Amino acid sequence: MSISESPTRVEPASFRDPGNQVFYAGSEVLRGLDPRAAEQWRALAATDFFPALLAEGKVCGTEPVDPSRVPAGVTWAAVLRHERIPFVSHPYEWSFSMLRDAALLHLEILRTALAADFTTKDGSAYNLQWRGAAPVFIDVGSFEPLRDGEPWAGYRQFCQTLLYPLLLTAHLGLDFRPWLRAQVDGIEPDQMRRLFTGPRRLHRGVPTHVHLHGAMQARNARSSTTDVRAQLRAAGYTRELSLATVRGVERLVRRLDRAPAASPWADYQRTCGYSGADRVAKERFVELALTTAGSPRLVLDLGANDGRYARIAACHADYVVAVEQDPDVVDTLYRTLRTEHDRRILPLVMDLADPSPGGGWRGVERAGFGARARADVVLALAVVHHLALGRNVPLPAVLDWLLDAVAPGGRLVVEFVHPDDPMARRLLDNKPDGLFPDYRREAFEALLAARCRVERRQDLPSGTRTLYQVAVGG
Image 1 (cartoon, helix red, strand yellow):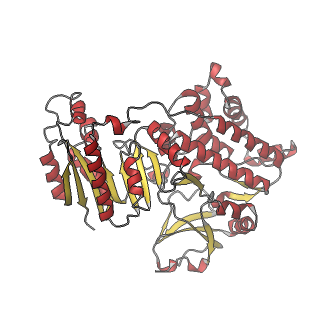
Image 2 (tube, rainbow, N blue to C red):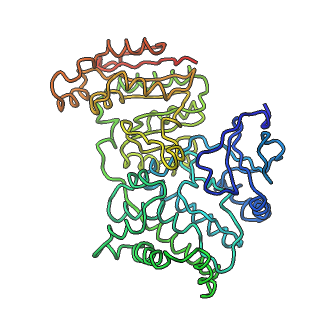
Image 3 (cartoon, one colour):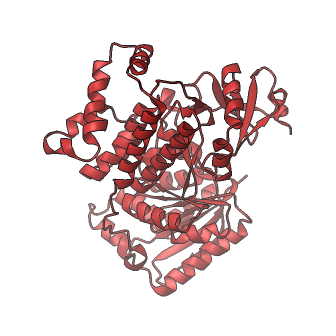
């Protein structure tokens, strides 16, 4: 089917810049440009720096296509086709090191553009995505020629969605994710100022980018953007000053760090109670399930811990998303994958009992995890008991949620931990007696049989855990 024959869907997050609109035609990711944006694109494509960024993989693959191929009723001066990102994630699902590396790529691209008399008009963390453990800049429409005397228009966005979250975690040890999840535009300077008082005012980066930035913003609250730009031009603001500012922020971000803390899940393979025989049997079961699935495009590993089974899945699938609740475990996994230059495993931080909801305008600007999670194979290993016993989610609801994440014709590999397993007993010891009368293997198998087709079942040698491979109808 050609592009012109494919049904189209506008990207819900692509409305803030009227000159650019991203939409989907079948499997194609397209960007429509109005006349002004088309002219800027042609100038960008003629530079030396932009093709180099494309070749290095730092900007998503982009090429022009014939505008006449776009579906009828849509008229653009130019149309671009982008590579499709394997799985779209949000900054509040990233670990600290992932957010920092995304910020550094953003700054590197801006610095490179400034040197060639271009800039980026946006500074949002949402302009970056991932190919495994490698960040990639996706907002090609953000590039525009640099005008003399104008500062970086994306500075505020960069602070609110990238720099401020990093400062929160690096300086105060606070988790930045709830802040970004609650506010799609990020953390306001005034909120930061209230947190960085007294001696905290002097922490690295805080005087300039929090207090001075907030004061300047308050002082110019009644001024238009045009007025501020005119003032800066009159004061002799130059490209060299912009470059110096970007280099300074880049040095600051590189020095911000927070080593992953010790976590009870960091050494899960040793402490989870599996015997060596259990582990070998479980790995063989998972590998056979992946082989049976053919060549899955996407695998979700829910409750991934240290990524052991995500790595097995990556040997058989195009792409693996490894979801784990503990941010320090995810950060450790990410740093390892980054060192290995891995491009097939994307680690994400998420509480499976409280997955990312839809956010932004009308709740769809940033799609919730449930709307994005449709995989050919879903691994749910040692997850059910944590949700059912640890978080009091009814067993049928747990299973329904897992099955919803499986694409039609796909497979779910799920582990049921029996009530007499040491890990299950530990959870039950903290609950009133008789609270979970239906948490039994027989009840779980009845739920499976009513919802899908069980292809394989295997008891692990310990006798307290059972693995299931089930097919979800297409």
